[in-house]
Amino acid sequence: MPVPIMLPPVPPLEPGDHLTRDEFERRYEAMPNGIKAELIEGVVFIPSPVRLNHHGSPSAALIGWLGYYWAFTPGVRGAGNATVRLDLENEPQPDALMIIEPSHGGRVVISADDYIESAPDLVGEIAASTASYDLHSKLRVYERSQVREYIVWRVLDQAIDWFVLKEGQFVRLPADAAGVIRSQVFPGLWLDVAALLRFDLARVFQVLQQGLTSPEHEAFAARLRAAAARPK
Image 1 (cartoon, rainbow, N blue to C red):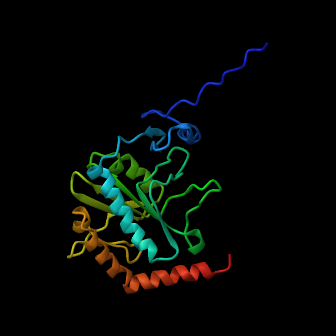
Image 2 (cartoon, one colour):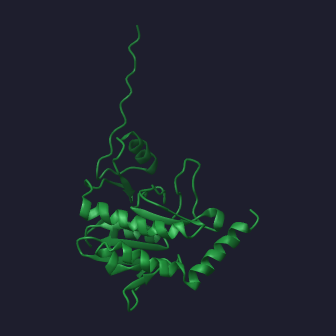
């Protein structure tokens, strides 16, 4: 009787592995559910277990803020922990992102197997401090891939960095005299930075609601409606 050939199991992902995107996806799909992994510049990163105050609550607050904007801006969409295929060596899984829908003039491509295959319009990440790779290797990848806006919440530093792409480079968006930063890509997406840092979500949503009733948001919503109405 012939001896059956035993195929080797799919090797697990290990931090520091150097893999192609295809091999990364093959191993990732074989990992237990709930494991988060990213491919940055061809290197595998697996975050440590998520702590409540250092990551879990900030992530929920950031996603909630973007979700509020999404609810009142037809033609955009938010997501949390969605894998993004940026290129053959980079497949991050941002804590939060937002896109303009392709049906409303957006530039992103959504693959047949339901992945984003180009740079999102906005990416948000929760980082421990300035030492995090979110502000180093990952920032450079997002910049090169032309993510239009990038938000990093540095939890231990009690700070939020908001970058906008200008002539191929990230520059910081400044806050106004009231401490509010206003998106240049998503008009009406306003953030009271101090309120978010102290988890005063009532104030965060109050300021965002002001942005949603602003003339610039009304004009943006009209542009999205017009783009959706164009013959495809």
